[in-house]
Length: 397
Ligand SMILES: *Cc1c(COP(=O)(O)O)cnc(C)c1O
Image (cartoon, rainbow, N blue to C red; front, side, top):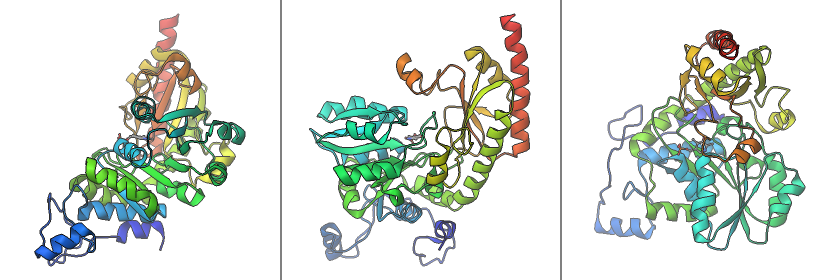
């Protein structure tokens, strides 16, 4: 079966009411039919729900769908994407271990690696996204247990060659852990390219409508077992309501991603030809430095486009004030188009040299392209660029 069919037809077993749509199992615990059953469930000789911190039918349905989409054996859903990232590390790493991570990381992933894991004696080395195979290999130490990265990255839209890292993994033996949030399992399946774990912020495209938080990590049964142990006992569980919402959303993920990606490509092409835009970055534009890799590794370019405008923050301010459709928010992956100025918001805490290394300039704008009609989006950005040019000219005159 194709992925969209699996995402639509995977469902919990019908109850005695013969419902068509999965009901919300809003229950913290489950009953035992007998003392023996309670014993068997705890001994794990029988499979079943005990307590919603461990498992819940709605959460299981969501996990099962993502495993099918990612070609993974098992998975754990968590309350947020960051809980998934943390569980994927805390469940598998111990004091004395070393992580190699890509420098272009979501801010909180950077904080976990540099400020939290370091307290427990887990060290790290950062590598640039566009580093060569030899540079990645040079960062690997005897005690390197995990390589962690995002591709494409936020907000730089840099790609990492997963097949290249899978080659290094064969040689050096580490766990290859990929944040697949920007691509979604419909555009890229890291496990098929040699990764061991794929983690997601389900808050983004999986929900896709800016409603609930969630996260998930999927991989082999062997690697998920210690992550499940960590999650079961520390409790970053996904709520049944969020799982119910997310599972319904997965039914339309394929449809939404198709529109997201075609809108993003068309907006990127329109803005690339605009005289007031200094540069446009999008993985499926031939001008992207890793266009060939993008074509090989992803089936479409995703829904994030970045542009750079001249005139720094003043120009960004004027542009944002004149946008009539796009929302100003730090979020992404919504049906509504969102613009963000990473320099002053999501990435403002980075040191100047770190910003420079990641290409985060004052005039950089991250566009999370939504599902609105593309004609309206092109028109909105075009008119706001024109108006903001006039304002900035008047200020600098
Ligand atoms: C948003 C995001 C996260 C964090 O997810 P939350 O659900 O906000 O905890 C992690 N990685 C990437 C790439 C993200 O965009």
